Image 1 (cartoon, rainbow, N blue to C red):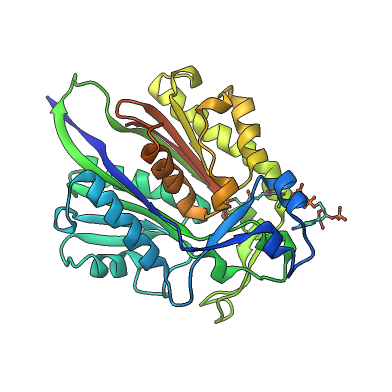
Image 2 (cartoon, rainbow, N blue to C red):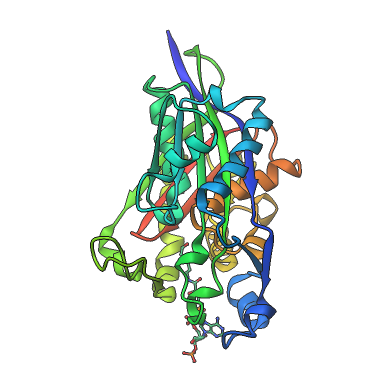
Length: 325
Ligand code: UT7
């Protein structure tokens, strides 16, 4: 008997050129570098240039992931993009990315789970591959969150940044007793009763406008650590692992205090935790794949490592996945 594994072939990332520091922000809103660093750990964020769209960021990240995998766009037959800031209301940013990659075959669609978008996209692609509906998936988290921000609202505009990350997953048929590899298991959750704690106050059907991101930061913070721990514990239980088995913890990068809180609750040491929130801020669905890219580029995440990814965001949505790299 055989089984299918969704194996990681490569990762990529891209950050727009323009960097905005906390000091620069403090010239336009009533904030300070000291407040932002102390409350969030964020020091700077990247912001897309005028005319630079989510699919453009996704394209840069995807090309790097393809290069790292030694593949070309023609090898991909599934594109799943986690985004909350699509280029257009429709078509899906995944369809526009497919077009920019110069391919017309396979299937491409977006997943909308806000900051959890990449984890949801990984779980979706893993299901497609294991269900024999595709052979090679390009899984992307890409955002231009800057376009949704109210730049006069100091409670939100200091928190977010733009960027994209990409990962290639490949279906491999192996004997039933083959050693574990690739995406081992995912755990996803949604609870829409919390929708108005983190949302956009506009939309096609609600207002006919784009709107701005609104957040009750304290409320989100209150739920974050518990929700993150819930899905991580579920993934560990399903795989019979403990946090001691993890080589790397790659959390969603919203706030250093949330990352530290989750690490402490779960007993994951800081040395095993990848942190990019200081340089990237919260890039929503792009934060986890960007962190994976940074840590594999600098040699921390290596083949064979056991990597836990997690995210939590608007909806609320939250999820985790365990990956043997
Ligand atoms: O991806 C998932 C989505 N997002 C998150 O996970 C974010 C979750 N929430 C958070 O990270 C935190 O709640 C924040 C960073 C947003 C806020 O930190 P906090 O420690 O919860 O602060 P707070 O909202 O209680 O605000 C404390 C004070 C308030 O002033 P008063 O009422 O005490 O006088 C705010 O008005 O800080 C003030 N404040 C600021 N001051 C300077 C809020 N934003 C700023 C700012 N600069 N940018």
